[in-house]
Image (cartoon, rainbow, N blue to C red):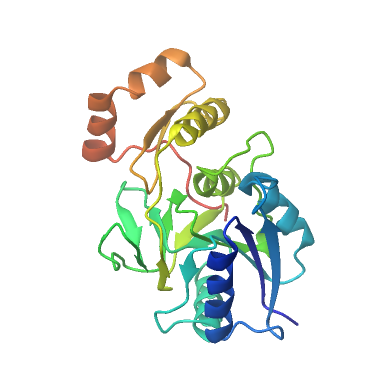
Length: 257
């Protein structure tokens, strides 16, 4: 039985070929890994939120890996290391839903194990560590725990935070794990990013009384179904006061016993 199902949206075939070569050289072969590619080379036919849900439904393997076309398994860690890392994580906490290599913990600290153009420290643990959000370059879903992405959103940003919040609302957890790869891109903040942020805040605010969520891109979001609380929490000095002084997040992060 295969261990992994990799799903990748790609719009640059050369980048995708580089990813495939890196994947094979790291020990992910047809005997242990299945691959689904979503071809956007002729326009954005596919987007992550819907593709994550489609890939989850199509996955018969224990783990779905939804990742970018520009990641490379070139840091000496491949199939055996990832399989072992996830096995150890499951032994530690069976309630994990999604794992990745960069995220923000419940003290609003970045937890990261990656090499990328941002020149951030590529080791900031300890690992594994629970997080409220994950970077989208690599998302590993535990199919047995019923992961999902929002069906009301569509776009190329904030889906890493979205899947984490679904886990948290279901009293389950997300983790950053000790699995080191290279990400060739440092991310972007164009008009689409800010449009997606507004839509994301609107959707998730309806599901919280008052909560703060921080993303790896250092966006601190105040989520509240009460409009005046949302406006109050969106003030920079208020968010700094709560997140830096009180470590207040308002998220019920503990899994059900």
